[in-house]
Length: 359
Image (cartoon, rainbow, N blue to C red):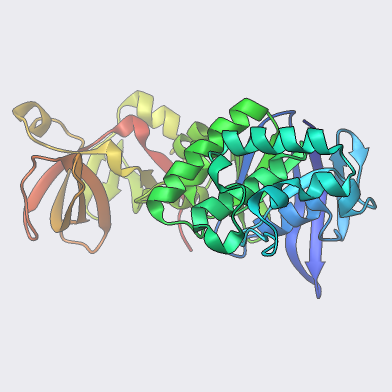
């Protein structure tokens, strides 16, 4: 295991900054995930940590050792790529053992380590096969095993599950988390898949256009996003963002009003704001289905546009009445409605977030 620290790391390509002033510290044994849209710089950060990219400015420390000028092969990190990069002429067992043989580890130790890793990854029955005889999921496990067997200080994973189908990706994701809990190797994982980020990470780093937007636990990132980018990137469907104004203790959303309690008003800090955007997660909007709900003042009227049954619940896409503003929310699986229906919904006022108005 190792600590990792990046201090104001920048990487330029032809005077264009792929990443800019990246700083964070990863404690021993933690699993951190870099997430963001394509081109945000997450793979560049990973390659810089590995020593595959020469940084333009800043410092990278592994266990308090400055590694800026230390070549990749001497940094004691293991990296798993999206394309697996297995040796096609070697068997699974030989692929697993290759790195140890290069280090001239005794053959009996190699054999023991290969058997142990193969058992942990459920690939013991594949040790004599060549990569071309394996499925994509099996190849991925071999690539993971080849990295793990070295017992590196750092484990770097660059979108390792993106080539797998949905069911196998979920299974392998679970196995990855169990492996990390078992081995405790400090891990940096790159993905654009927010589900992977939320389920795997001790801490998430959200990136956009080469800069860090937010660092926090999955719960912090989801419940307290610091800006609109984080709010809309994390969550599926994304957070509803609705233009709003504040007038006499009311939020006004396209001519509909929500009365704010003094406590909510204080938490939102609306004084001095004339125009802003309101953020609300779909699960914090509820169908009005009782007289008690209908008596509340935190109602909105929507017009149903699309109904998507998901089994355990139903996802509804609607527009605020008399507007084109789209709002997503959930209903119970037994809810019945169709396109064009008018529906009253209530909003959980304590879950509202406020962002600066879009330009």
